[in-house]
Structures are given as structure tokens and as C-alpha cells.
Amino acid sequence: MVIYPIDHHIKLYMKNENYEVELLKCAGNQLEKTGYHLKTDDVDTFLGPCLLYLLGAFFITYVFWKEYHENEKIKGNDQLRKENDQLRKENDQLKKENGNLRKEIGERKAQFRNSWQKTSLYPGITFSCIQ
Image (cartoon, rainbow, N blue to C red; front, top):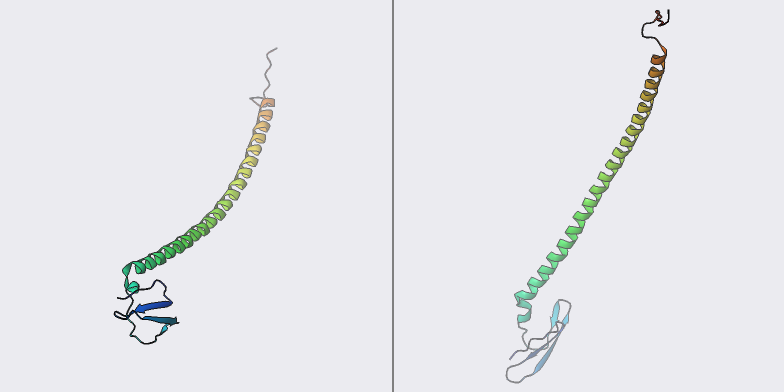
């Protein structure tokens, strides 16, 4: 009967007949053993923990990938904001020019009205209703 431990640093094995306990200690990647032949641990060969580690790695990779691409979108939005600000400045400048031109047109219309009302329809000829 073999007992598989939960602890990965200290492993206990029992012999079938004697139930002798052998203590194995892990030192880095090398295992120091005190007598019996070390068998592969079935706990380490389960597919479940490997899949969980793989799933965790994919999840972490996905989160970092998502954040990276969101930051790129934000950088792209900054460029669009700069372009929009420049277009707004140009638009404001054109509105000011348009306002100035409208004022000038209004002044010219007023000048024309004043001069038109003062002049006669037929210059050089004067009509009088009273003779």
C-alpha cells in the first residue's frame, strides 16, 4: 500500500508488509532518498492540475493582452482629440472671419441705402411738381 502525500516537499512512502516509513526530502530538483526506490507520484500525473495551470496562464495572458490593446485605443483617441481640437480652432477662426465679413457687408448695405435715398433717380434732371 502506497500513501501519496499532499505536501510536495516531504513525501512519505510505506512498504507493503512492514509499513516502514521512509522520509524523502526535496532539495531543489534533486531528491535525496534513504533506501527504497522512488516511484513516480500519481498526483503529479493528473491532467486536472495541469489544465488548471494552463487555464490560469491563458487567463493572465488574455488580461494583459486586453489591457495592452485598450491602451493602444486610448493613444489613438488622444490623436483624434488633438485633430478635433485643431479642427475646432480652425472652425472658430472661420466663424470670426465670417462675422467680420457680415459686419462689413452690413456697413456697405447701410452706406448704399443712405447714398441711394439721397440721390435722384435721374441725375442732372430735376423734376418739380410745382410749376
